Length: 358
Ligand SMILES: CC(C)(COP(=O)(O)OP(=O)(O)OC[C@H]1O[C@@H](n2cnc3c(N)ncnc32)[C@H](O)[C@@H]1OP(=O)(O)O)[C@@H](O)C(=O)NCCC(=O)NCCSC(=O)C[C@](C)(O)C(=O)O
Ligand SMILES: [Mg+2]
Image (cartoon, rainbow, N blue to C red):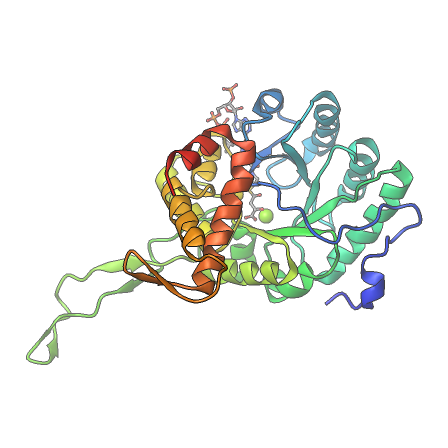
């Protein structure tokens, strides 16, 4: 894991840096909405988006043209200084650690707007060494800026080595807040034969067995095929690594902006497997993410019924013909706690959750 002794793990890494957190706060982050701070039209929309999305993220890395890198950095500083973010979190994605821009990204952002940023997303993380580098540098910069609250770090898993090292990445620093999938870079690094940004592929499928007549397979018969999820393995590994370390997994980008149906399906797979949120690249993906990553009123009502029926939580009871016990109660508590967190920030959801009787 970190290689540090337990007593040193929560010590600040620079004199005067804030104390690391012992627990990562579970703040709602159903959608992490990306914007390019160097794109004037996009940037102009950001202040009005405060309160409509859980996280706004000023992206400095890929999707920002090389000639705009400095404008994007400065644009983010200006937006952060000039906007009251209220309950909405402000994140950034810095450039890759081997790029010519990242040192200035970190130095400028932490010293200028470190008190306004919540989480720094680091792309293309390969192993614990990348997190250790960022961890120490952030501590030095936090001390210099006189920050009282430590910045958190979110790693994007987008290389084969990163996936292989996923557990050590999650445990590399008390700053680790979570992980996102980077399906496009990961596909390229693995030499997958896709050309998309996330989502499925029609060629990745399983086929129904052929019907048999007198024991002979009829290979000419029409057979159903079922498209499989290319990202299941990686998301499942991320979910376990994050749960093990008390941090949060997220899906990532869905590049086919027009295909809102497949986007919703991909997001829902991630939600059901344990992810707490996803990315939004275009304003229309925010509503999809909010819908998917907020449990339905019916599921919340059912979970509340199980909690009520289970009393002190021990033993087994029958509810609607089904056995409920300690383990189903725990699943229901996950649902109820999430519903309470979301209801606290979203009056519309609160009304839906309160409308259905337990
Ligand atoms: C897809 C694009 C090009 C379509 O942009 P568009 O202008 O063609 O779209 P539109 O539908 O025409 O836009 C309508 C209006 O919404 C605005 N708008 C549009 N998008 C946004 C936005 N995000 N935030 C705020 N406003 C936005 C846009 O400026 C326009 O404003 P207008 O009505 O005044 O003309 C554009 O939405 C965009 O650039 N989105 C962000 C892309 C991005 O951040 N990509 C990087 C993350 S994915 C990634 O890096 C991979 C990964 C993880 O690394 C790995 O898998 O390896
Ligand atoms: Mg990438």
